[in-house]
Image (tube, rainbow, N blue to C red; front, side):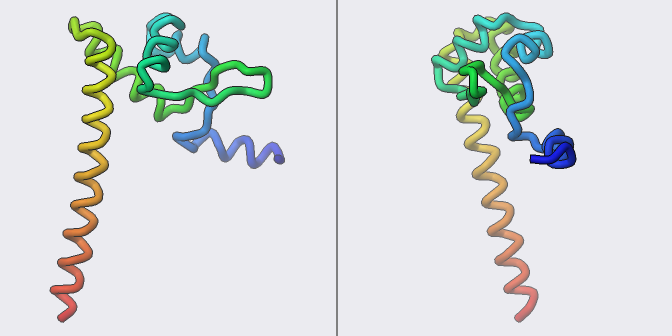
Length: 110
């Protein structure tokens, strides 16, 4: 991998660029919180060659939403389930919108 390849990955939301310590700092939470949402299977961090957890920007956004719910008093397991369902709903809506666009294009083309 070249330096250019590494630099280009900084724009990749799925690239595991953040250590556990840095992720916790960014989120304003503890490393224990990150471990807990990992145990609840909300996010699964990748592991470095040395076995250290690494988080992507996408995972940090998911963790931030869970933290928001926990801060509002939602138990961590419930918060994780809510975030998973919100993520699934967003994906289903995106797929549905794409199907509607495709159907409209086919209808408009006839």
